[in-house]
Length: 141
Image 1 (cartoon, helix red, strand yellow):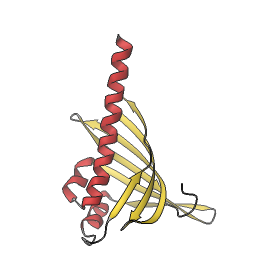
Image 2 (tube, rainbow, N blue to C red; image 1 turned 120 degrees about the horizontal axis):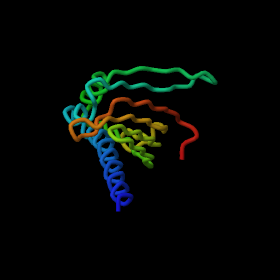
Image 3 (spheres, rainbow, N blue to C red; image 1 turned 60 degrees about the horizontal axis):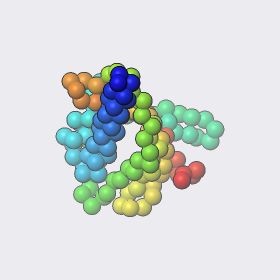
Image 4 (cartoon, one colour; image 1 turned 120 degrees about the vertical axis):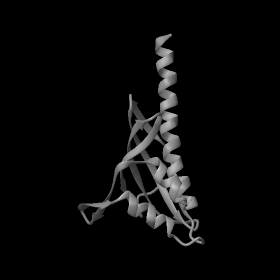
């Protein structure tokens, strides 16, 4: 009985993590500043890995800048990050998610990559503490 209870609890936690990540991209599509801010921990960090030839570079972005950029995107511009699948691991109050994605602007393909999320469960809600992503135009699905 204990094993099935742990399994159900694990599934519920994984689904809650997935829902938090989905809310991020719903907020991005809706350009909803409050919804975007609600999914991030106050100390969250964002990084992007870019490639220049064979050399990788690490770019940093604050959550505040990210949210502000989305909020001022023109109303007629539709930003749509489509998560292709979720790979989620949970250990107590900490979770990790690996999410391959495709990004579209006004229904036109822009780029693809992978997001790596770290989350913490705080006051019964999952909050994103860290996001690192890759972005490329080739080698996509």
